[in-house]
Amino acid sequence: MTKIDKTTEELILNAARKIFTTKGFAAARMDDIAKEAGINRALLHYYFRSKDKMFDIIFEEKFREFFMGVGLILGSDMPLFEKIPAIIEHELTTLAKHPDVPMFVIGEISQNPEKFLQRIQGVGVNPKSISHILDKQIQAEYKKGTIKKIDGPSLLINIMSLAIYPFIAKNLWQVVFEMDEHDYLKFIEKRKKELSAFIIDGIRA
Amino acid sequence: MTKIDKTTEELILNAARKIFTTKGFAAARMDDIAKEAGINRALLHYYFRSKDKMFDIIFEEKFREFFMGVGLILGSDMPLFEKIPAIIEHELTTLAKHPDVPMFVIGEISQNPEKFLQRIQGVGVNPKSISHILDKQIQAEYKKGTIKKIDGPSLLINIMSLAIYPFIAKNLWQVVFEMDEHDYLKFIEKRKKELSAFIIDGIRA
DNA sequence: GTCTATAGGGTGATAGAC
DNA sequence: GTCTATCACCCTATAGAC
Image 1 (tube, each protein chain N blue to C red):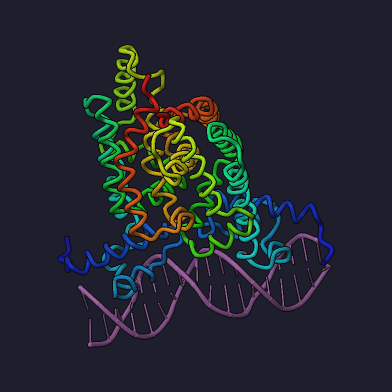
Image 2 (image 1 turned 90 degrees about the vertical axis):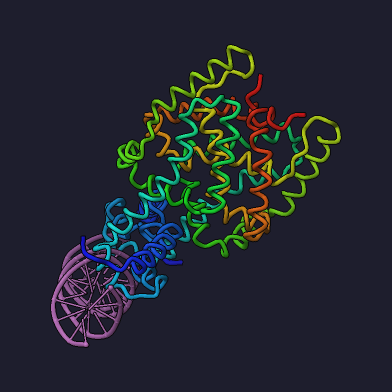
């Protein structure tokens, strides 16, 4: 519990957040972070001891952001036809503000999938129970004759694909479509309205 | 045109392909590649001079694989309702064999979007003309009353999202769904049949 | 062509002055 | 708390023996 200058610590964390999320752990340099924060390398170690420790703090934070919101919606008892728009709305809104989070989180998970399970349970998201809730809702709608036969994992991955991929490949599509930052965010904004309808029409009986 | 041992060269390229595509440029070590190939580091430089040059060869190759096939289908005059299943079939089939290509290619493009435009033109794919062809086909179907109003970029990114994201986040979803390699590929195989229907139902009027 | 040895520069981390 | 100087190791690349 050493007394530390709060503003410097946050200056460093802001810099670390920017560098790690845009470059990933392997390509990020302590010097990049120091320069971004406008201080020198030694100070990073004074506040956070090592690159690994600093990375863990940022990753944990982004990991939560990435999974917790959608986990809560998915695990709720909201009806299926409300859940889908709620997820789309939530994902596109938060990711528009933090476009490089998906690539960062998924990229680092890919390098270290073993660490992933315990971590996701740590943030209070239980894949199995979520999966179970979703399966039950799909079953119910199917029996009512409102949707086609589809299994939970398929529907879930369809929703997440459509919501997340446009951010993962944002730089790629910006070049292809010749869009600048602002154009692309407008494009995403327009998708908000279209995507739910697209998904629901895709599963409706 | 020095005479070089073809089999050693390919041994190295195979190793480089594996290491670069799974770890990315920044995390890949020349020593990883040497060990994977069963030779020593110096030999890598003898054949390919530098890490950068070696990487370029692998990236160029994977870049082509990733864009050319789908580019040809998209640019063809195949009717829209055949084009969509053709893309899905092509993508899921080739990516099932090379699951880490999307993360590799998109990840490296994200780090260097400037280099991307010239490169894609280099492989004979012209985004603008493809976009134009697709737009015309959508317009035509819309006038026939067969599909809802949707713009080219939206439809295209929907298709690519659904096809590619499951491979980008493969390790993540394998943990969530508790699937091993074989389970996941079976899951993908099943999606092949479902996805086209899902997309077409999603845009149908 | 393939190896060992090593140069040369980067990179994370620490010591110590202020 | 913040800095400069520096260590120790890592990593790419090259030299030179075989």
